[in-house]
Length: 168
Image 1 (tube, rainbow, N blue to C red):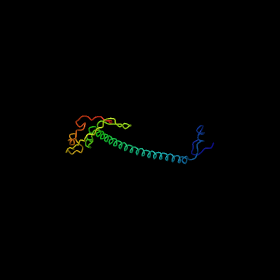
Image 2 (image 1 turned 135 degrees about the vertical axis):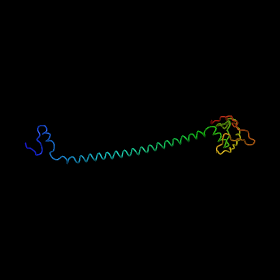
Image 3 (image 1 turned 30 degrees about the horizontal axis):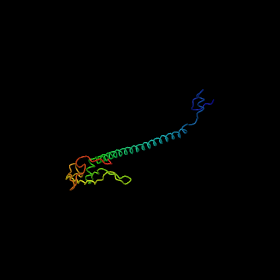
Image 4 (image 1 turned 180 degrees about the vertical axis):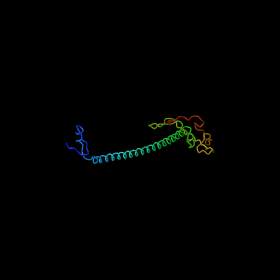
């Protein structure tokens, strides 16, 4: 067997394995692999950075939408409280009196054949409400109520509940 310079002589299994490995310099084959690994790692880090930025942007958008939703819910609840306050029977009564509206009385119906069911009666004379001299724009419960000259008091003006109509 010939001996190579700079290499110790191998025997047995080690000699067989040494014949399988290339004898030349191995640095030239490692350079493309190292570059490939560096490029893949760099690309992975950049991809993670882009994904993280997109998730943060989505998080900021989500928090902004939640804040806006909370504000709109608060506004909706405030408006619902306002509607509920205006829909109370005493508030409706005050507004109807301010507008000069009167209770309708007992309803009369017209049958399909043209006959009238019930006894028609004229509507009561409206009650005039004078606003109090206070600075509040809405009439207070202590507002003066005076009937029109020669008018009889309307039903319900004496504090008795109004008669039920078909729409109550």
